[in-house]
Amino acid sequence: MDWDNVRVFLAVAREGSMRAAGRALGLSQPTIGRRLAAFEAGFTGQPLFDRLPDGLHLNAAGDQLLAAAEDAERAMLTFERRRAAASPVLSGTVRIATGECAAGFLSRCLSVATTTPLPSGITLELLQSLQPANLTRREADMALRHQPPESGDYYVAKLGTFAVAVYRRHGEDTDAWVAYTEEQSQGQSHEPARWVQRQVEETGMPVALRASTLLMHVEAIRAGTGRGVIPCYIGDGHPLLERLTAPIPELAATYWMIVHRDLRRAPCVRAVIDWMKALFAEQRDIIAGIA
Image (tube, rainbow, N blue to C red; front, top):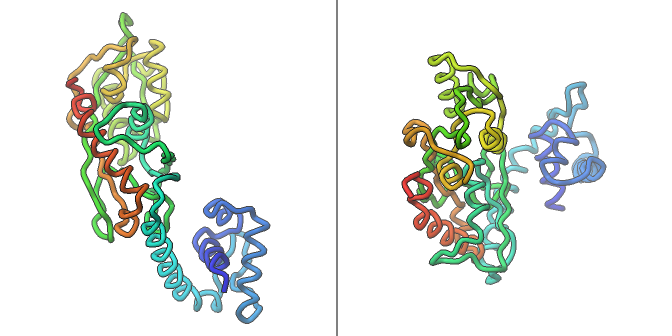
């Protein structure tokens, strides 16, 4: 049996359509269709999905195969991780799933000299997603998250905590705020957005701009649009910005590094782990806003 066809079957079952399965696997919709047809032909030759207006749903025959396909996936993914760990090659791409704050920090520090430099043959690929990457399925090689996982076969290490404060453009005497979108401000998962919204409501000051990303906030504050919260590692070193507050404790962003234990032994991944630990240790005062 072709393992790639098993992956396609599982992706369609999880995503609910060929198009979404193609996005998840990085394949075209026609390729997904051909491989799904080949997978179905390998059994009874009958469809394993009901084609409904809202997408593809497993029928009784497909549902009977789901558990076995997931067992095969776990076995193959374990094999792939251990094969990667056994490779002696110290070059290639290491994919890191993380948020805007840590991604920006890693990007600007690639050329920073550390006691443990990143080997020249390694390329970092930074991935940002609203959903945590599934490390078991190799959606990423490692992840930086605000909380360690509660379970799973992972190597976990605390890296450091980013301080956040209020900044404005030098010389701009404005009380207006650069805030996040109303949806973010009312949600439970975005503390900076909720904190700024509380300041707006308590002070009665206007909102000059609402924007959804950290980059938009930095650019708006730099241009003098208003004041807002950004990480100290960005604001303290920016020639056009001045800090208006001490670091705000409730906005401090702690990051944990998470790697599947099978993949931790891969030379490229091990090199990135060592580099990242050294980087966070040597830049600790900068990210804490006390440099």
